[in-house]
Length: 196
Image 1 (cartoon, rainbow, N blue to C red):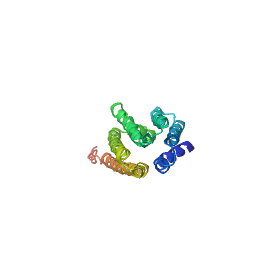
Image 2 (image 1 turned 45 degrees about the vertical axis):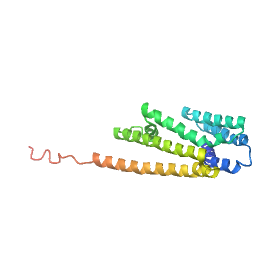
Image 3 (image 1 turned 90 degrees about the horizontal axis):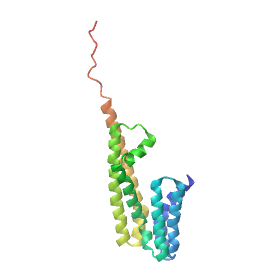
């Protein structure tokens, strides 16, 4: 739990730290923050899918350390979005979908309509990662340090929260609509009357 909180805190403050310290600290020292992010991710979970993310962070840190340039540090959010796109996208071709896997952690026996819904949710998240990754890349290529930090350290997380909240509201409506359909009374209400 503590390692997960530390990872979340470091992830949220990473763009701000790169922006604030970029002019006063050599990039190779700032690269240590990526090493720490990767190490915390590996320590927080043993899942294979996160190992690639940690190795990517180590790779960007290594490029920064060897060349002592700051641009690889700005590409970490792009790398994360690309990696999540691959992780979610692969499950569309090798079911169950990512959203279904996550849903089954709380509800192991998903009905068929829920499985179809989770597939659509996985596709929607893939779209989100494409758009978010493209915007992160645009700020890395053409944005100022302040614009990059603002988008990748604040706006992107706000958009993710709005997207997740909207999906939750849609999910509630889908559940409610399906429950109403399954609760429609049978037209056989008068069956059995007048017998005997």
